[in-house]
Length: 433
Length: 89
Image 1: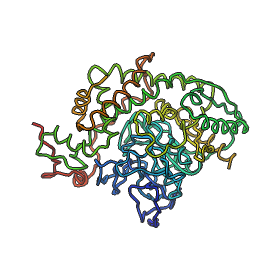
Image 2: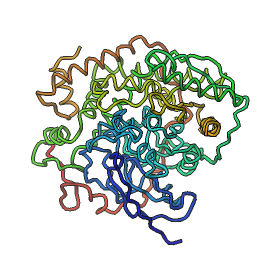
Image 3: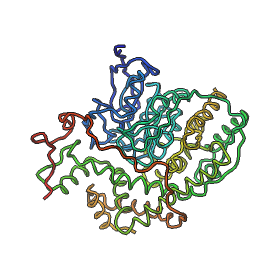
Image 4: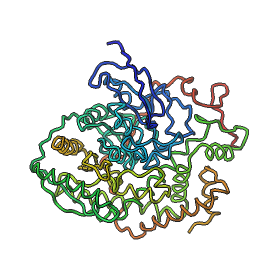
């Protein structure tokens, strides 16, 4: 079957794309001719991939990420590369070196992040589906803020080969789309074993969403409706959970005491991993040239201070500090204990319930520049990071509005029960549409 | 509490550089974040348990790889088929 080409010329009013492919080719298959946008931290052979950072400006990967190869094999047309917070570090897509993406639902607000470009491209109808990545909520947050569906798969279910690493132990590539069916279809294409990723598990996803949730037990953690969660958002989500009860599910109150430490554990872990991962950007193998006449220390500092954004430098420094002599025990090892406690809390709760439900984000989409203080931005991730710390699957599905802006219902499940969280989201979506 | 000198030192360790005009803000924000991290002092419990998957290794066999020109394509400075790096000594 010869490749065909399509014309793709979106009216990108929201700065969703960093790079548009105007005449992408495609073949036949499950995704024949469907446009798929790819977050700019996922390698695409022959297409510039920058992680929205000046330090990778002009970098053209010589190979495709495993998931990109799979999406192409399934017949999809790669529509372009989407904007993001630089290296995935942010919750708003304002930390892009190439300007913020705007929320298509209200251009005075952020689309969420860090996969904000992917979410905006789908929400605005520019593409049918998109790939995002989720390290601490970066698929689910923008899905919630833009009113689309996004799935963070179980850790190990989707290959990270070709994903430019930020925090390896937390991040997963996942599908985004307007409907649960689209997200499920894309998940079916990208999941499965890849020998190039040593954390890859042989758990393909071959599933058609089912709306029957009779007898399902849903855990409702008190922490997801408590302090810091906007009461209006909580009310919208509670109503959505009521809808699931009408469909035959029952709810069980529960508690995740380890949540108190989850956000600190997350930020210590991801900054430590980032400080090591981002050491490779030094202007030698790619990126803006390091001055080879200078000593390596001076040359690297010159390139990295000029080409990394403020938030990226902050996280590299935080991680460097937390791992430095004398502080490892106080920060990193304590964070790993806290992480294990989060896993154990989920394990305990999942003995009694099938899924856990709550809001995806504690508020609706922020106004542009509202989160200029880094710590207040970090705190917004409190409801999404637990799933990454535990490695469990979690989906965000639109469940209504607050102040005219979309609210996301988050469903978390047991390891490798991505199918079940998809089914619950599907049941809700079918009941309200 | 970390001081401006500490932040300067960390920036040097991490090779990210820091300008005089950034030091005050960075130090202030650093301290706010570290103060938040202090909550971890109260964490109790054991470290991570063993996982099902560990030490995933492959045989050390030669396999096809990218041609040299592809590997070098993104390198800003090259010489005789090698990547040129700053002085180490």
